[in-house]
Image (tube, rainbow, N blue to C red):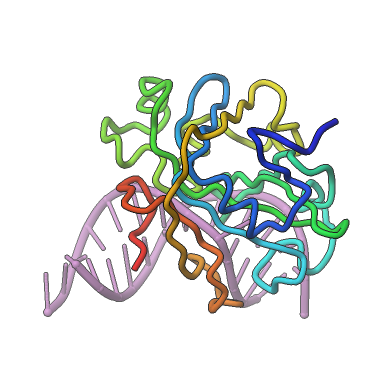
Length: 188
DNA sequence: CTTAGGATCGCCT
DNA sequence: GGCGATCCTAAGC
């Protein structure tokens, strides 16, 4: 099984994969859009779920690269990560926001809003819009229902501190597509 | 515009 | 028993 998908080698540091993912298109069962915001988390990172080692919840992060790690946030929302592997350790990239492109009607139905900007502008929102749940945990990104499509041209990136964490707040591992109005919060 | 609080699950100390 | 890689709503300025 290859670790290369959409021209990206997932057997690489999470902060590199996080940048390469910006601009690629993610579909789940034909529903999705362009990735415009990501965050990287790795094994040496106190803010990461894998920092303290494998557990029932984070096991997928220590599994195969180019697979999904889905966890429940605040007991309510689902969040989707792409598993990377650095030096044999677990790491992941949190998918934080998409620019909606395909399956808009299904997204509107699942999200309960007509406003394009509110469909996928956050990790919990995009999982709801794409129908991602625990069922998708540890699934290969190379096979249905997942589909990852390489970007056609270069992407201009912006970076900043990650959102919603209380540790390692100085690490600038939040990445976005410059100028996109579909990010969860503006970059400054 | 900003801030505060509630929902609610699983892991951690 | 505490605390999140969140989101929504309501209230305050």
